Image (tube, rainbow, N blue to C red):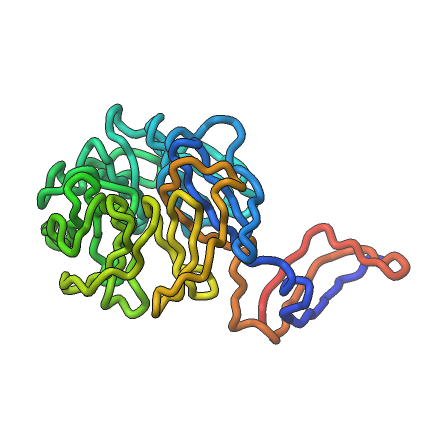
Length: 322
């Protein structure tokens, strides 16, 4: 008999999902020409992102709103896209000018902004990869060697580290003005790489690869102090889902207390994944983010099907919350 079925389900956080790690750690390896994937819970190496030699000189990795993972491949001048959940390769999203030296990238609305180490500035690209011109002119505010820690701060301004200028510059998109944020060598800054605003947005961490430190500054540019020292070429900075501070260096990904900066040990060992020249950390979910406001509410699944014994096979399903 042909029937119209309506099924109501209650959304609950089950024990099965609790046993599965909800995030992955992605560690870019510049010299290993790949992005190395680790389990975020126990730090186990899981796989290489790409086994077909598409990546050359891995730099920043960024997650887009539509669930795509963008990977900056400096040495062949491309930005590649992968499915963030399955990690399957999709396409080459952007082709960069010869000699540009792409390192960092951020999303700003529909645009992708890309920093160029050799270019010493930032270019803009549209959603289909079209070049929309220069965003930050080469050498603006003394910038030299624009690096992969480029980020948009909580104030909506663009921050770009200068590896060769040992500085950080800031651009206001509303006014088009670029100014010095952290002047050359302030606080001992040497070979600026990663930039990470701390919770609250009043302080910022910058990795200083040249002297093995992570330095802390107030958002009004005053140097606060050395947060972490004794590292071996620190680069990428990120926060773990448990709130820990993550720092990439030659050894892999190290974890620290986010308030005291006390060491919590090596989370992901670079030797386990064969990482050479770690440059950037991303933390990405292993499943779509659930709408927590709907937990405990009804989930409706509707469709036409034929009931056979105790089974209903519904080929075309429509669903909604509430």
